[in-house]
Image (cartoon, rainbow, N blue to C red; front, top):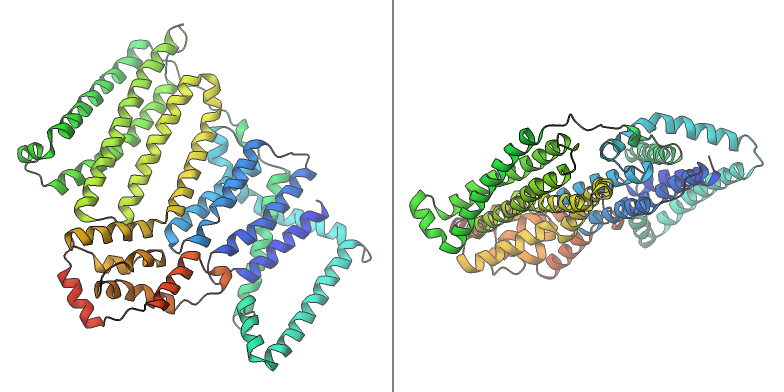
Length: 480
């Protein structure tokens, strides 16, 4: 273990203690930087050099950690952080295969106890000599901490303005906060040690090889897929006929309403897309490969299925667009349509890999993982709560229908869009969000840009409508 690794681990622990505990925003990225340095130093000590894909995973993980600092909504931020951990595990392990990409996060769990023991050995080796650099550094840190605590407390007691400034810059470590800060310090240390240990000695998940399945005959393999292609083709033909012939004839014939037609179709088409991906996976595993024309057969049949599935994806997205036009946008609806679009992208990548042949099969696992990370990052940067508010505000201006209760459950990211509503609807939509912000005055490093903007909007134009007035507004704004 390099001495630089130990210092980076210590910095991670100190920043975790100082910045965590009040919420998640820019502090996540600030803590991740020294942890990344610890992994880098450990990897160099272990003889590893960063490869292009390693840099892609690492940069992608850090980019995902910017989402909580920009968006107040917790659900896209959680998704971004979870994906960042996954990309970090890929960077640490250098995985390239399907098994490596799926199992890499387990390496971080496996390294938790090993990292603690490894870090303890490294600390003992370097702190044994009291006159060494590590011993001097530890004494310097201890003396500096004591001086800052003593004189900082004296100056804070002497001047209220300085005390307010100090309180906004550093966390409270007194009273009940003390044990919690100690836990956060230990958490940062353990996490950084685990990441550094994996970087120095990764588990070679790529060595887990999954062999091809038993080869099937052409008829046994191709006939079911050709029939499935015909079914997809007929369905897509009906969709095109409905598109150009108008929905009204279909609605009259089926007895469904416009919204029921859209809602009923989307979920079935989403499931059809997922099942198609499974069909492709198993079809590739059992595909015929002994005869010279087998590769052409596989490409033709599966390529056709992929193209027809893309039409199904487009139909599903159109169904959801119809439903949003009728009933507005919600978190569930924007989430599932994003997932459907990503599944369509995965199908495009499979088609590209099929055209590329063996070389495409090598890059496909990493391309799918990268596409998922890009989708999550774009989803967070797009600010789904803000998009939901903008869409529903535009719908209200056309139809005078608005779900006031649902708008109040959105995060602070929705405030700029809701601010465009006319009174008293505007004030009623912002009352609940304002109440949550007033009760949650967090420090700068735990405050997102979305929350800061919302506070400014509400400060410049605070809601004025009363609770009784908002009850009447909610009854008048019909939403189905």
